[in-house]
Amino acid sequence: MEKKQFQAESKRLLDLMINSIYSQKEVFLRELISNSSDAIDKIYYKTLTDDALSFNRDDYYIKVSADKENRTLSISDSGIGMTKEELEENLGTIARSGSLAFKSETEMEEDFDIIGQFGVGFYAAFMVADTVTVLSKAFGSEEAYKWESEGAEGYTIQPTEKADIGTEITLKIKEDTEEETYSDFLEEFRLQEIIKKYSDFIRYPIKMDVTKSKPKEDNEEEYVDYVEEETINSMVPIWRKNKSELTDEDYENFYQEKHYGFDKPLKHIHTSVDGTIRYHAILYIPATMPFDYYSKEYEKGLELYSNGVLIMNKCADLLPDYFSFVKGMVDSEDLSLNISREMLQHDRQLKMIEKNITRKIKTELQNLLKNDRDKYVQFYDVFGRQLKYGVYSDFGQHKNVLQDLLMFYSSTEEKLVSLDEYVSRMPEEQKYIYYATGESNERIAKLPQTEIVADKGYEILYFTEDVDEFAIRMLMNYKEKEFKNVSSGDLGLESEEEKKEAEKEASDNKELFDKMKEILSDKVKEVKASKRLRSHPVCFSTEGEVSIEMEKVMQQMPD
Ligand code: ADP
Ligand code: MG
Image: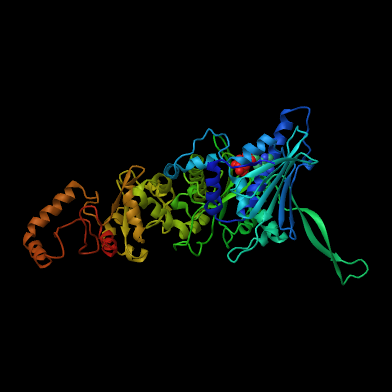
């Protein structure tokens, strides 16, 4: 029997793999099961393209069995199997085709995508096993082969006997050490848990012999143990089901099952896209703020599945920061993720999905505003601030997505209104969208600066949060209407005649104004006559870009 060395690069990758790529050891099972599922897919495809063959679903399955005494775990499938050459090629080298020149380590870091080209999922087995044995009989072949390896040292291949087409992988599970427990991977309940967690939606049954107990026939008080083969995975993922088959309750159950939150979600979005990129997604808007939302611990992201297999718990790249409260999952067939499923970040496909999802969330929120305003207001009370920060951050890059979702309290409607609603109510001669800032709606309503605007019958938006005015300044305008703080110098309300009158009054009373300015010299820049006041004798106004309130906020900011 000849012993072969892994190719040099394989050796290095194997080290990398075992030591750093996967953050949790339990994912080895997900990798092996997904390979089995792929192998069944391949044989299924053969039957589709060959009339002489037929595919009987019941014949295709994956079986997981543990033997505690011998510390072995085996995963067998009735998939397409591997020939001797395929065993060598697929399991003996990591960079299978050899067409990929191995890049220097520094280069690799810059262009991490390269790692996505290597198939190394199989090697995850070495995270938990000392020895890995693969028995395989390829479809259309009479011979079976045994591949065996103890890790980086190399592998052996020899002929063997195997009755059925398919592959059986046996792991000799490592002994426990002081730091690590490996025995759990031989426990029925633990294996079931891992299968449910990562592979629930694999389309073929994943079977296990499960120990059960039942009352004895002659004595109901006593129980006997017996073993029954069970399918552990549910096989049909909810996101692949038709929306019409599903109830609100189904979606709520899924939300809870997945621990997306403890609340009952405010809204779910179920979407399937079948275009240049294909994916299914179920997204949720929580009803309450996640308890750690504004803490450092909070991580945004969606669960990411590749063809039914969970590959990442929180894929941050799928959500923009301003929608960081959204929970849910995405399943795509088109992801080019292999090895560094947990690390790969800058995938082009992911970016496309993110863009689509963002647009979808926006549309759904807009629909909610239109069709179920109460619910939208409920949402806005919890997450509106986040949207406003979203407008403000990144120099207003996202304003197009967000501006239609903003709401502010209106002086005339006495409730939250959207900018679109405001603009659609503007009388023709009204030039600006007016707003006033202050601590509370009550206090703003009493501001002398609001009088002239209100007198004209114009609506005023009340800004009570620090972020409000900053966000609006980023927008600059909405539907070509500029925003105007009611306390800014020129409100565009005075006619030329009124301005002249004011000027005349100022020159008539020049002495009085000069005296006032002298007394207030370090507090104001100018004292002017104005036509804007109604019941109040005097008010402050500002010149230039920064309002009094913004100045206050900025003074509080740390340098
Ligand atoms: P990937 O699945 O990303 O290609 P893996 O390291 O997981 O990489 O597997 C390497 C290759 O080994 C697979 O592409 C497949 O050709 C082969 N292989 C692994 N497991 C099986 C199996 N159970 N049945 C048939 N072929 C398999
Ligand atoms: Mg794989």
